[in-house]
Image 1 (spheres, rainbow, N blue to C red):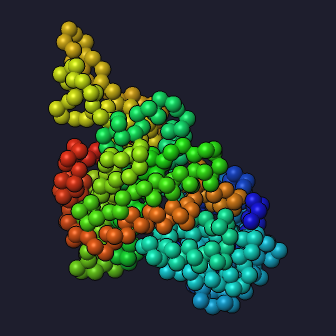
Image 2: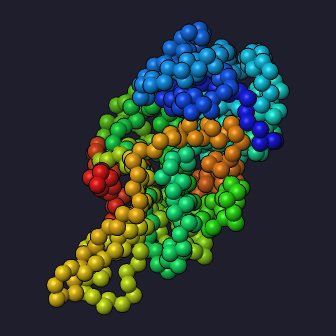
Image 3: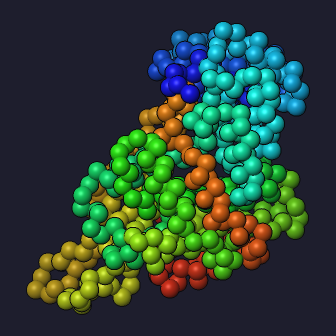
Length: 465
């Protein structure tokens, strides 16, 4: 596999929601930057005309921010082609080959339900559309350890290892990449970034909206599969990994995989599953559904650096805020020289990473208050603050995939190691606990973390400072 740029993009599932919400705006952004210079061949089952597809693209761009560059917009529309076909019909892949024309290094983007991944990959192989090509696979990559292994086996039988791009838009966020940079571009962290000084780590990804019209998908996935096993595990890996030997993405992937391999497999008592009030009344949801819309878990990484340090991960729908934050809480000073150096309430020193809706890095330290008494207060020093990122994750990831840059994608050993951690509790778990909408989840989640304090609830007031 060479590092030549892809000379066409084949977009399977072009009429779907993912393409409408994320991929079309990303392609438009690429057109505005002048980096979209290849044909975009949409593939789907509906018998649409090219004019209807162009209208769908137009609607998408208008909804995502508007058309502010007519030249780039018309360039994008001019690059579009449409192939109608059933993914189970080999004739569809023959039609794709014809639509590709002289293109010989296409990138095949599978923006389709996971149940169709294997079908399309095998179809591409049978039609000789995989040689010199790349395949971009949307998450979830498998739904448990067994299916992930099988999908990896099928994909690697058709495509070379370096031409498989497992996309997770979370990894394309500027704030996520800043974790890696912040950790290894500064020397002051290393002496304290271990079990001797870190008391616990929390990662919260909360959403103030519900499942909405995605009931059919959520009934097959749930919060543990949809968010924690991929998004939050990736954040943990960046926080916990050892320094890679260099900036080569292979070295980074290797260190992240070691973190997943060191994670202790979960047991039922390690997680609390919740379901917001009214979820079962949603479309395509079973009336007695036990699917979790909230999940909190306690995780351990059995490595020399992190042995014994609890990691608390939490995510859910219809929570109090929409935000993503990491809180690394440090242990108190070994000697209580000042009465309030170990506060009776509140937290000891910590490092806080806000990942969304904006990004920030803040360090909390105690400072003495004015006066004769040696008493103080904890204040946050903001080391970094940034508004919404300029380059959207899908634009960045699409550009990288078509250039053959795998730095922000996931390798098969990491995928399988992550599934191995959650696999024991995918079926063997406690029943969901109900929680009120716009709360912070079921009370049982508070009991999970009680031995190490309490949850850090992200506040949008802090985000707007």
